[in-house]
Length: 308
Picture 1 (spheres, one colour):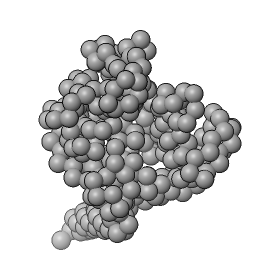
Picture 2: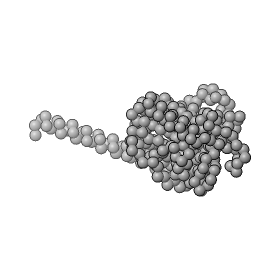
Picture 3: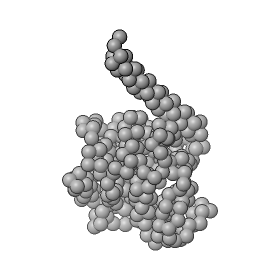
């Protein structure tokens, strides 16, 4: 064999070995991360999820649920947090829609109820159906995590903590938060995002949740090295209850870790002028919403975001 050909063969073999080595490292790291996380998580919620058929692979819509149930609760809890995230991999535009938990909507098989009850009644699939029926929101995937899983995942993804400019003093579940800039660990961040015991109620809470999500997105590029992505992706799959395919999850994480994404755009539902308080229902204090007006506002928000 000629010297030039031998050199070419050696180069090809070296490239092949590198590909095999990287692939093996990725697979092993992902598996180990997932195994470690699953050993600490007890997933009891039955989430048979059909989702909406995805025809455009450049865009995905993910329903995000913060489960207020505890690990010893067989049926899980209500959706303490309910959001819908939309991401376009070509424009790199992340969009977040927060749904007020007291929104009064029709839940199939249960009548009029607060929207956060859908998760307790029928898991992610019933919640998806309610969001689609009430607001015309198509959902491809879902992510659900209880309080403990959220804390563990934030501490893994952001080992140095997350910087938040706290808008007020807060005390919740024995966690004291001072007003102003500070570094929060997973538990502190959770309490900051959960707090609603003031005159603003859920409106202030949703604003702080959006602030937290914006901080997580902006600070993700400094959170951890790309080399740790397979292991952390495995841990995320282990900690979370989700149907997002592994390759999609890793592609999403790469965009955020590389800092390639645009600033997060947010919307709160119900929108201004589309709701009214009602204290005289079987569900207690609720927000009666104009579903058509909110559906129009959501679609305009999504379309405006895609055109940027």
